[in-house]
Amino acid sequence: MAVAANAAPPALLGLAIPAILVAVWEVLGQTGVVPQGILPAPSLVAATWWDWAFGARGMGFNPYLGTWAETVLFSTKRVFMGFLTAIVLGVPIGIMIGWNRLVAGAVDPLIQSLRPIPITAWLPFSIAVFGIRDAGAVFLISLGAFFPIVVNTTAGARDTPKNLIRAARMMGASERQLLLRVVLPNALPSIFTGMRLGLGIAWTAVIVAEIVAVKSGLGYVLWDAYYVGRMDVVIADMISIGLAGFISDRVLVAAGHRVLHWKQFGAR
Amino acid sequence: MAAVDIEGVRKVFGGRAGAVEALAAIDMTLAEGEFACILGPSGCGKSTLLNVIAGFEDLTEGSARVFGQGVSKPGPDRAVVFQEASLFPWLTVWENVTFGPRMLGRPKPETEELARRFLGLVGLAGFENHLPDQLSGGMKQRVGIARCLILKPRVFLMDEPFGALDAQTRMQMQELLLHVWDEARGTVLFITHDIDEAIFLADTVYVMTARPGRIRSRIVVDLPRPRTIEVLTDPRFNALRADILHQIREEASKATRAFEEEERARK
Ligand SMILES: Nc1ncnc2c1ncn2[C@@H]1O[C@H](COP(=O)(O)OP(=O)(O)OP(=O)(O)O)[C@@H](O)[C@H]1O
Ligand SMILES: [Mg+2]
Image (cartoon, rainbow over all chains, first blue to last red; front, side):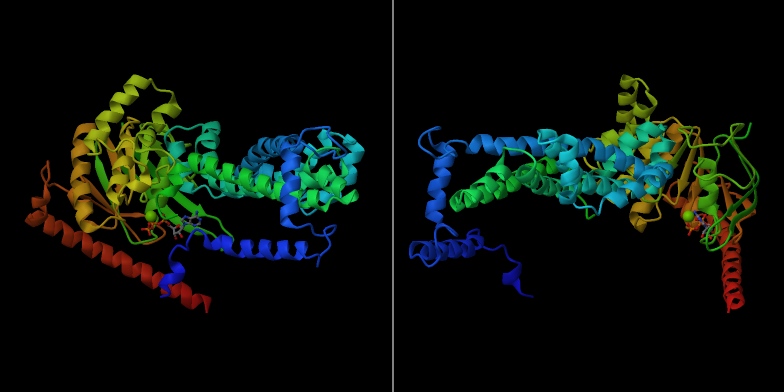
């Protein structure tokens, strides 16, 4: 047995490769091997980011000064609203599909046929219906997050052990109580898996929507900065998107651990 | 009035692989307060019979009545103890035990008092806040029994509740069950593979035939109660065991022969 490979790696090991990459990138930028207009050095990106985050607004010609927080907030708000809509629709629909054959027969084919259409393909439709407004972005985000949530909820509801359902019935549970007290809690681990996948898609969707369909947020700034040749802003924006996605996923996982505390026991 | 009255019950499972006749024509009457055990070869329809009485499966022919009422769906008057406990893993022991009364909207103070009493009776006082996955197999089964007791059912249905336990724990659970039954009373239908278990627990032992299941014989166990482990060495116990063992062997070999014939017919 390779004991060393199983042992926990030192915490800093994972940072080594990124650190080397950043160092190489910095050298390439400083020496001018790669033009700053294409790949600005990390130090420049950091400085830009600092100004973007903390600069005094309206000074000079830099429209980005001090707008980082509100930009992130715009995107986060859309993600939050779209994601919440996806949960509010996806979980009950998924439970019903997983529980009731009639509902499954009626609704599942529709969902399965819409699911392969990528959210990017919905863009023109979304703009045509909602115009260049927030609602369009929220629509795309909720649509993108809806499918993994509904599909995983369905799977979780469907594999409720037969004997748990029988036990609940024998103890006098009504159909409604059965859904809320047995099928739903049994599906929760799957629902969380679906929510994590959905949240990832939500961040993809918000960027796409902001590039095309609204005039604010990280996606809008990304494309706008590219147009005016501010690659330093582009890269700072990209990293911001990654961070926002990462942090929201961690928050979701932490919430999941709280709700699913019973899952940490036992072998399943 | 009989506690459980089974008349000409036949059960055929339809399926893609063809129809399976699980029960042929079962007749069986349990008196109120009777502790009945069912023995029979594997696959003879024991669980099917219990599920019909529980209301989990509907029957093809015949009638199943519990205290005169035709069985139509599951309900708290017929509590079921499952082989794998089947507790809700997301609920604590306390929440599992009080689940039924909460669903039924029974008054909270009474429920709490009963929960405390029955958890004490099955020896789980102090484990109220444990999750099922933190319990041993025997402890889970005790929770399974407590959550049935609290329903105040008229009939207890138990499908090999101790089948998955080791011999030591199983013996303890059998004694515990008799102790609990002394307190709670009620009619019990208990399925098992274990002849000793059946004789130790039961007033009457029903031996079923190989599938399709019928009742082959009804044996009255006239050993005095309360029973303790000592009863295992009683000569009457051994006589009963020899008789039942002989019957089971016959049915088991019938089952094997039937299986072989089916195989041959298929080839
Ligand atoms: N839902 C079902 N669909 C089709 N056939 C079934 C179903 N449930 C049980 N059977 C069949 O009915 C017969 C009796 O099954 P049952 O589970 O009642 O047997 P059993 O006596 O409890 O066996 P064991 O001792 O192994 O638990 C078996 O042949 C089984 O394959
Ligand atoms: Mg069985």
